[in-house]
Image 1 (cartoon, rainbow, N blue to C red):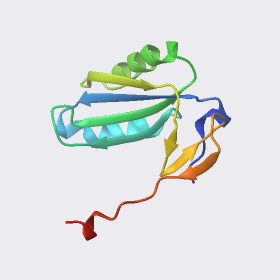
Image 2: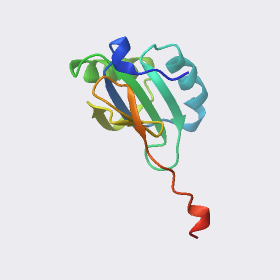
Image 3: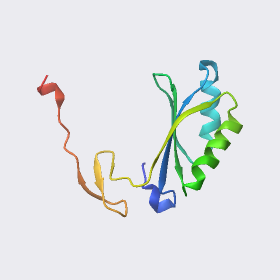
Length: 114
């Protein structure tokens, strides 16, 4: 079940695009799975081959959490980070300022237009 982070006082979403040796991916996922801030970690294609998404309480937590990541995973290199301050849409639902669904985004079935 997905919840709205603002209701649980985790209003910010931080996305870290990182690099990690392939033989460390499984251990890293286990370590990150124990951190309550982490919403997703996944191997992805590209130079930044390991993605970490976390919910954080304040903008100050962005660098603190990154430092904690690097302490827990010494082989991890953060290549880029982004912070989402306001989430206007989640899982196809348009959200109001309180995080409640107020509409949806229509799915364009590309299979009929190709």
